Structures are given as C-alpha cells and as structure tokens.
Image (cartoon, rainbow, N blue to C red; front, side, top):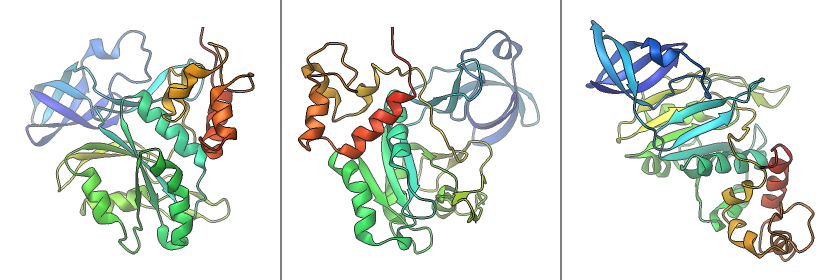
Length: 301
C-alpha cells in the first residue's frame, strides 16, 4: 500500500497509509550501501509499505520526489540532508522583532527553495512588536520581486486568515530560526496538534529549539505543512558559486550581459549585475546577501 512519511526517528518511520498511522521499519536494501544523503528517507516521501502486523509495516520502496528542501549536512563528508520531500512551497518565517531578522537568512532560504523547485513565501511574524512601516519595509524588497509576503501575529491573530489561505490545499514546509514563532503559528492553523512552543532566550536574543525533528501535519483546510527544527545555518546543497546567480530572480536575466562569460559578479569589471546595483535597479540588500552566500560556496569546475 502507498503511504506518506509523517515523521522519522532513526531508521523507523511513522507513515500515513489509508488514513491511519503505521509504525514502519525500512527494508534492508534501503538501509544498506553508501548514500549521498544522510538518510534514506525524508519527511514527505511517498513510500510503498508492506503490512507486518497491527498498524506495523516495512517500507519496501521510495517513490521519486517532486520538489525537495535540502541543505548541506553539517560535519565532514559533504552529504545532503533532505529536510522535506514532495513540497510545493517553502514558508520562510522570520520575526519583525525578537529575534532580530537577518536578511541573509531569507535570501539563503529562497535560494534553497528555488534550487529544490519549490515556491518560496515570506512570512514576517510578531508584527505586533514593530511599527507597520518597519514590517512593510522588511518585506517590500521581496514583494517587488514577485514573492508573496504575509504579515502575521500569533498573539493578535493578524494575518492568520491570509496564511491559512496560502497553506490550503498545498504541501508546505515552514522554516526559520528558533524563536520566530513557527510552532505557535502552526498551532493556530491546526488546533489540537499541540506543537511545542518555547520562550526566547533573552540573554542571547535567540530562541530555544522546541522542534527537534521535522514533522508533517495534515491541515483542517486541506493540505499538509512540515514543521522543521529551528535552523541556524542554511548551507546550500549542490549549488556552486557560478550557479548561485540563477537563484536570484532579478539577477539571472542580467548575467548574460556581463563583459566576461565566467563573471562571478563579485569584483570583475564590466559586470552587468554590479552596474544594476549601482544604478538602484537591484536592491543593495539583496546583492549583499548574494555576496555572503557566494563567499561560503565553492567555484564550479
């Protein structure tokens, strides 16, 4: 029978099959051998399950993925960590205040979504803590690029109806630094799931990690949402410095106009992208994000 992975724990999976939760083990051949990825399964995977007891089964096969959220796993080995599979959109959650938003995180998350063929959406939460003009200013750059931006407050309920409309009927992943309120927003979108929430660590202006593993939740309005652990770093998977520009929608069309075909858009003369930044046609904030990401990537061959 066909099912969908809801949660993973080591080499065991909780799978939704026929509308019921099945505790499953992985077939031996899925566990054996060298892998490029850190795990043979990911939350959101469609799998073939063979019954092996009362609500117990064995995952026999993993179906091809359509859209995946991946990052370079921490540590040595250069392996892929698939955070979620078969995802339609990535909801990048940041806070208007507490913790302070890092625009570079947004740019990395958007690049990660585009690299995985996923539509990015920006959600700015905790708007009750900042002036409306500040919140709008934070999202203005991304609105002008054509991305959907949703302003929310888990405390006052602002923007929750719009967020529900964005999530309805789609498979969404929510990603953001710890403390921005992902789990609180999820609790309000799907009451009764009791996703854990935590208070901020005031001393460091960072949030405690309240979600320790990714989990796929069904939504009452239809669709699913993946709640992911609070992520500090988003290291892109299989994107090198020469390919990075392809994931900045306002820069990619200009790349062909550079003086040098192998221009990396860093300091080369005759760079069409740097010229557009100087003329104000490309946001300096976004270009700074591009430079920070480029500095962490390797050159392609």
